[in-house]
Length: 262
Length: 58
Picture 1 (tube, one colour):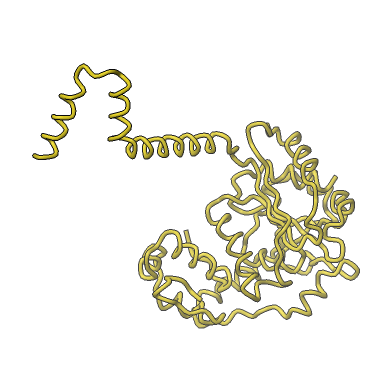
Picture 2 (tube, rainbow over the protein chains, first blue to last red; picture 1 turned 90 degrees about the vertical axis):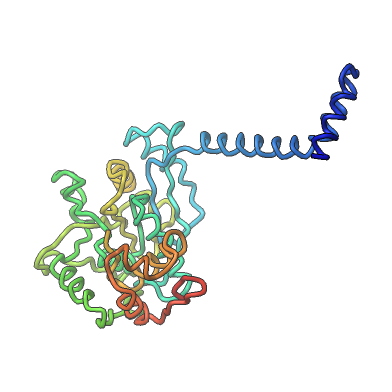
């Protein structure tokens, strides 16, 4: 009551007072409120501006053990955009070449961080493509990460890549998956030296579909890619690229593969 | 959606879910129609155990 009486008394005094005095009174009593309101308004403007400026992604690719992480991907992105009909003024392409992982699958804390990064995106359908050194591609292929390339490319397109297709045996994958249903089952970890030897470019032997019960084409080996050769990517170890099974932008992913394989 | 079967992949999904979405392992297990024990057993096979305090497998 005392406060209200005080406010009423102050307002009585201001009646007829010059504008300057009224303004001075206003700032004296409400400066904290003004400061808080100004901070809120500026923050809202910044958030809205940032949201409007952030372009949605038209293609997201993660590359593991690319060997050369300092690559200018702008030219590649423009070629992909042109092929896939992506307007780069409105959408963005994100190709992350900086990831590393021990060959043959995760071993240490850093590997698990890489896995988590990839899994988070894939789980939320925000990843289109994984490129990796062959032993790590094999690791992801065993998890049924990749789609059947026959669902993406035409027969004539696949024929063009026939010497570069990476196959997995679906029968073997299904058997492994059934074994993993048993919580007591201990997954065999890949011998690291064998994994390193498997992916060496000088001695790489791609899996032979004729030796498989149910071969599925899931990857494209990048050894013949001019982009790869020109940029010293996957130089020492063979790189393979696959399209994620739940990729939200399969057309753009196909454009990436076609551009890389030109 | 199913949880991955491979322990290494399971670890990353479980920790992501516990960090960002599920307040406890029991709620995560319920969401994915599995048991806490099954998740713990699988991740123990790669040397990870559940820390209730941080709600993460470490």
